[in-house]
Image (cartoon, rainbow, N blue to C red):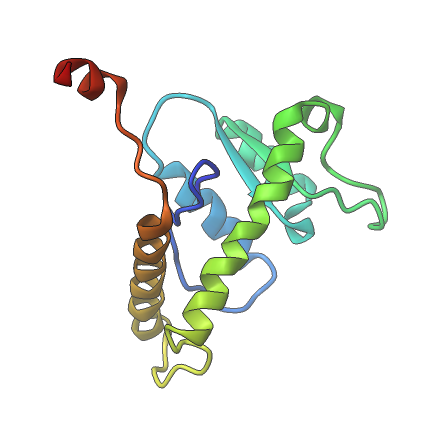
Length: 152
């Protein structure tokens, strides 16, 4: 999900394993276009030394929730958490739950009738697309400055 408008950028269905989510997150962030540095906000399950280091190698700033209760402490250090963007990412990352909640209630993927990763992946992506459309409908329309100047 991108932070500015809360739209889903990518979605993938994986097997329910502890490490599958972290690997697919890094794979999805690598497909995001652009040369600027990217940030990746995630919950405490992603606060592992391997994930944080892999993100930094891929030029991704890991805005991961700090898991201070874990033995050994958090893998996120002050070079990430001291910036105001880290706090903003931690607040906004909860918006992704709105998309999943919408897909489970309106999109009917709470109990899917399909079996297998490939068959469940398409309905999940379609639900995220539909959720984006619903969110875009409620977004304010912004007229670019050049369009206003041309109308004068």
